[in-house]
Image 1 (cartoon, rainbow, N blue to C red):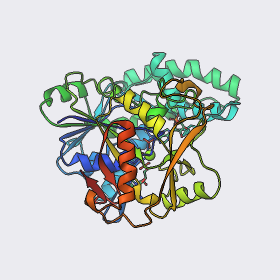
Image 2 (tube, rainbow, N blue to C red; image 1 turned 45 degrees about the vertical axis):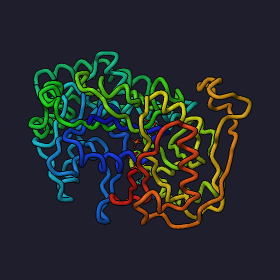
Image 3 (cartoon, protein in one colour; image 1 turned 180 degrees about the vertical axis):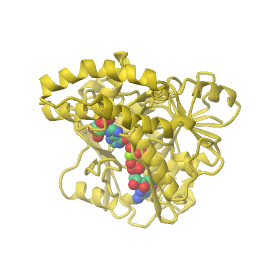
Image 4 (tube, rainbow, N blue to C red; image 1 turned 120 degrees about the horizontal axis):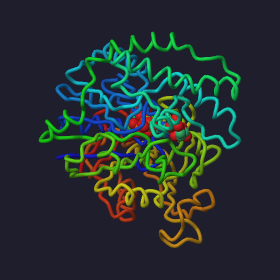
Amino acid sequence: MNTVVVGLQWGDEGKGKIIDYLAKDADIIVRFQGGNNAGHTVVIDGKKFVFHLIPSGILRKGKVCVIGNGVVIDPKVLIEEISYLRKKGVEVSPRNLKISLLSHLIMPYHRVMDAFREGKRIQKIGTTKRGIGPCYVDKFSRCGIRVVDLINPKKFAFKLKDNLKEKNPLFHEVYGRSYFSFKDIFEEYSQYAKFLKPYCCDSVDFLYTNQNKRFLFEGAQGTFLDIDFGTYPFVTSSHTIAGNASLGSGAPFIKIDRIIGVAKAYTTRVGEGPFPTELKGSLDDYFRKTGKEFGATTQRARRCGWLDLEILRRACLLNNVNEVALTKIDVLDSLKEIKFCINYKGHKKRSFSFCDLALVEPKYEKIKGWFKETINVREYSELPILARQYISIIEKTLNKKVKFISVGERREAIIKR
Ligand code: GDP
Ligand code: IMO
Ligand code: MG
């Protein structure tokens, strides 16, 4: 069984936890887009693991994790993540981690450019300032530096020189920044090259050779952060939807059997951009506090709001979702009343453009809260009846089965139906 897991909202839906759960029944786990803008959290025996580049499947023994060509890699962050995991007793070696030679590298000037652009823009995006956007820009303008270049000192020197020739005057004249030193970057990245070389491989060959194994593709960000289908320009710079799993890994020969969309039982968003069901005041605080809604990467407070079934419907369509994993249902446990957006006012189903998300007004329905703790529930039938009613509304509206229900941050806090 080959599975793709994607976020159905604006990221942080709990993909990391669902990937960790599903990885027990997979052999190879592949990241196919994004970079260290992602923060995926898994909690096991009270120990918290936060992943930025390495697939969350690395926590399962005997599995192989692949960072695919569609990912942009900050080598410093990747090396730090490898040592962070090793310190926590997790095996990370060239045996269980493969890095595509075709992945693009985040360079120091990408990070600086990201921060400068954010600083200068009138319309801010609220990026993670990790250099993601500028790195993808260079990839598509064909001056990017790839992993295959990193491990070849001559090629790397040539490409770095070529980039600095263009970028240094630009940074200097437009942003008033001092020049980037070729020598400093070359020396720094040569150290990274030495460390990472044993992990690098032709990932297409690797996946092709192993095509009979069970694959799990780990999406990062969420559907509405997709560069085309998201709330542009308040999006990230890659395709976050399931359709990119094949392109971002170079594995069209792997047949996808199942697409699992992960949705939080309410909605959150980090950074700028439209968010129809956003709450202000005490309920916003309730979600942030109870759901610990602070970014796993930037620690920024996440904006919180009610579940929006209209965006979920659209996300199911864009990703061709087969099954839904609903997370953080426990966060709703102590609410007297639970609202959800069933549609947008004045719009019949799907008759408006998602380009106008900033202009819509949500139409809410509500149910009574269940007012019972769900964190220790492991059987669907043992969930409070009102919680089951909430899930049933979601299923009927989306016409999809909610196959997994997460009731707490811990690995075992999950119900499979
Ligand atoms: P991702 O980016 O989609 O992997 O999600 P994040 O890890 O950024 O954010 C999800 C947060 O919710 C993490 O802190 C998880 O530990 C936590 N989490 C995941 N599932 C649940 C759940 O069912 N209940 C609660 N209370 N927390 C959860
Ligand atoms: P995971 O994988 C939530 C948001 C940023 C910003 C926008 C663009 O943990 O779900 P970027 O740095 O990508 O150019 O920022 O996208 N963003 C995320 N929000 N979860 C993420 O990843 C995100 N990755 C990027 O906050 O609004
Ligand atoms: Mg996250």
